[in-house]
Image (cartoon, rainbow, N blue to C red; front, side, top):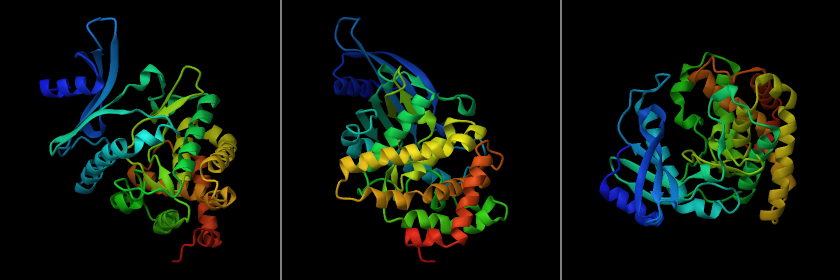
Length: 346
């Protein structure tokens, strides 16, 4: 990562530091459109007093480096928009949100035609544990519970909140931005029902702000596992909270454990959601929210399954549990229960 002398000076001023003494690469961004790096800064002349920050440098140039070959103008536009949403989140929303659901603070930012620069608090100081290697990297039950509590608090606090500058439909897989993947699906009941499932999720009378990419890799834990913070708010926007819950649960344990334990964690989420709603939204009947969202958990799985089936049909997340939830959603659709619950009129 290269930072100009002007950028370094601006970062130091914003962070109340004297100089940047080291820039350590962390990882490339998706499809090679930038990188993450950790900055080490001196807070004063004493070399023992240091501070670390994380820089997200985004390069807004067309890329042909997608691992599964999805390099279209639509995908480029979606990604570019996602970075703008993330910047808006940190500028306008995160300072209040972090009081209820921990996340990094924005220290400094730039937004130009060539790209963006986000300088963020380094969560590794207080939340050093993170799971980033995919399906073989598994958290403890304590850590899973921490993530679910984070989501429940977040969704409860931001129920029926405005989403100005964010995604009108949160989540990176929603149908409006994934028509190519939908067309790539083989004909099936899931493909035929995709637009209905999408409409039902949008029509739910209770919408919150959702993280939009609440997979395990986007949570950081303290050493006890009981405290957690979230990162990567590129797809934050409006939606029923079970969309986040589904994505988290899809990433925290292997399929055989999901079949055995998945619904137990769903119950725990709704217990925590009720507590959060009673605390932050006392004027709203928490039972009504839960009654609206519970059947949509299966729909959220079916909606995500639709994306995976077109994007990467052999993906490891399309397991028995995923297929069971999709079947449940299809059966609910056939019985007309979903239409009544979501007030969706075909």
